[in-house]
Length: 105
Image (cartoon, rainbow, N blue to C red):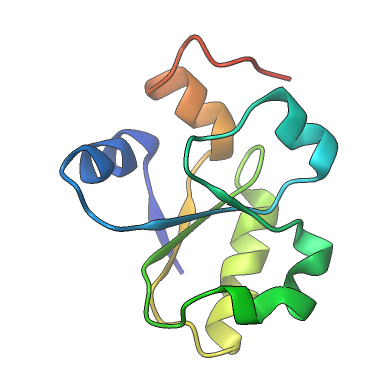
């Protein structure tokens, strides 16, 4: 499984790269904070909603700390998604490295 650091993801987005940011957290977690322009599909809904994802897109999966998203990356790879990355440290690292004004929980 491939991982990406928050700073590297931010730089790639600033450079205009087209990445799908897949937020797999629960609804109450998303209410606190979210990386802009993310697609929110809660982890437990993902098997039924795979059709919403482009199998050819580069997808960065994130959760709170990176543990759940690692499992989802493995699941997506098993479903034939070849370009999947885990955001190392999740949205916590995004807040620490990229957006220190982001609300945290």
